[in-house]
Amino acid sequence: MISAFDEKKIISILGCGWYGLALAKQLLKNNQPVKGSTTSPGKIAALSAEGIEPYLVNFTKDEQSYDPGFFYCDVLVISIPPKTKSGGGPDHVPKLTRIIEAIKLHKIKNVVLISSTGVYADLDKKVNENTDPQPNTEAGKILLAAENLFRAEPSFKTTIIRFAGLIGPGRDPGKFFAGKKDIPNGDAPVNLIHLDDCVAIGSAVIHKQAFGYLLNACAPHHPTRAEFYTQAAIKSGLEVPVFISELKEWKIIESVYLNEVLDYKFEVARLM
Image 1 (cartoon, rainbow, N blue to C red):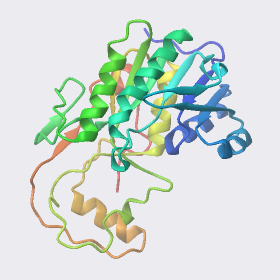
Image 2 (image 1 turned 90 degrees about the vertical axis):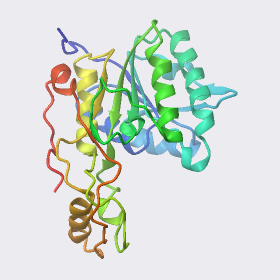
Image 3 (image 1 turned 180 degrees about the vertical axis):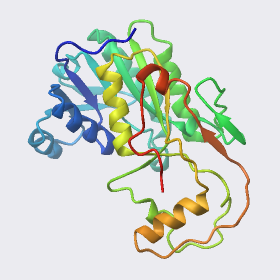
Image 4 (image 1 turned 45 degrees about the horizontal axis):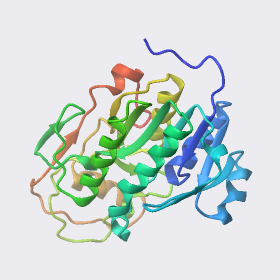
């Protein structure tokens, strides 16, 4: 039986980007002490202004530079994408290997690794945590290899959260296809999740000490691409996109364990 923390725990967040910063703010509201990392000295003051204890932390495939104080924590949240679009993909797994060495050196027992439902290929069916992902993209293969590194570690427990496509503040889906024509696969279902739910799910994992799990996190509503992105463009006052009415490669992301482990109810269950 998973029980809630009965005392404050120190949470370190490696990667205070779009998700990591939002999670940190929520944890602080819940009176949890939060340490946050950045690779940029210029961001130290911004983290501190939010009430986050800031640290310069930098891992590469060849070396690392960090204040050991960052790793003095009860829970480490890792939220660093592989950056395949900018050519950083091949460095991601070696970088995480170095992070695992630091985790073991500092004897951290509980880890949350942020991953993506991009590990699943479009298998033309519903998929869940028990489905063989069979990734067929560079990013998907890298993400799955990263997950497997953490799942193989016996010295600490890792919960892996696979987020679906991310929407929310600063990520207006109306802009994704606005004004574009002849967009393929218009009848394929979307798999998305709002930042509010991403934060709530991460907070719930920490609060309920739900470590050692694999969790898909995707809103249960799956309108077609044409339906969702057309309405999103209209809502944002943008030129509506034009999709080709066809169903090619697709998937629907489901979760077996999100409700079972966290008793979780989505805050943004319907996407439109």
